[in-house]
Length: 320
Ligand code: NAP
Image 1 (cartoon, rainbow, N blue to C red):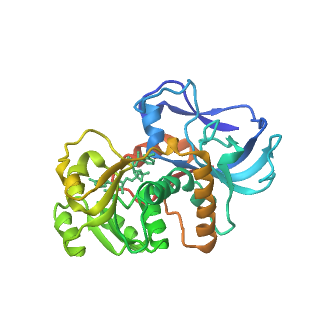
Image 2: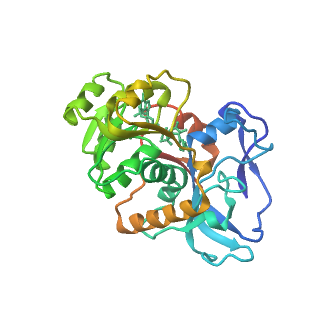
Image 3: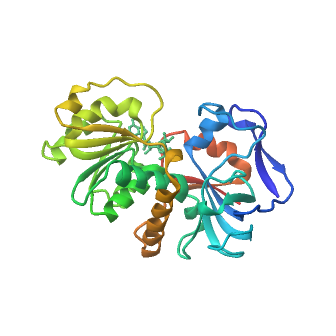
């Protein structure tokens, strides 16, 4: 089988397409014939050595994938050979024709959902769900700002919030991105590259601000975000690529809070419940992952450049 291998950390070109022996599942594992692999920003941080830990080299990048079960190890009951599935936290790396997963991280893929869409579910949808409902505890009729709504996590957050009757203000930095955010159901769409979006947001909320902000670039926006919060508002930091100065008094006067989230810290039982909820939304058609770009496995390096290059438009997947 073919897989992408990284022998040394560095630029996208360190990812090479190589041949490897067929994999076999161990006890409690699922072997997937990968049809599509999700490309997430974190894959690029790990490859570049910027994630705070170094994988054992050589390694195969990628957490998320969708495909067909090829074999299951001892003790695996909830999926069987031939099932359409999606998975996260791939044990062997998902940028490959075959990938191993712990069974707990493999879930049925409804027939109406394509493999490419299935590859968008692991990191983006679980992060968006956990930030919105576990961290911020968003409620129906509250107002949410998805600051960076055009990418993988942002489009998922807009869909999940609309499904829960949360009013959504979404931002994007391009015309196409703003159209996409509107199509996902956002009530108001703004341009985060235009400083006027701050005034426009306050006008749209009649000066009250928003109850929840999901922040994709905290190093740019966190200081300003605190001024956009309604009383008891919550900002959840999802993405951050540097440091930022804030005025904590903005929190004090609002009884507000800044929360951080790291998907890796999510307990297994909560992840299981989130996937059950995602399954319902996928079957009902209220959740429709947006595949913005499909590339062949051999173009993994271009996929890594693309995921870090604005403007975002949904999620990027490698097709096998
Ligand atoms: P993505 O698909 O590349 O999307 C990036 C988003 O950030 C786009 O909507 C982009 O909008 C937006 N953005 C760019 N400049 C912005 C600005 N000045 N203000 C507000 N938004 C801005 O990435 P993703 O997969 O959605 O992930 C988003 C971030 O969350 C990344 O930094 C990622 O590493 C992080 N993340 C963290 C976790 C966690 O566990 N904490 C999990 C998943 C992802 P335009 O391109 O339209 O300008």
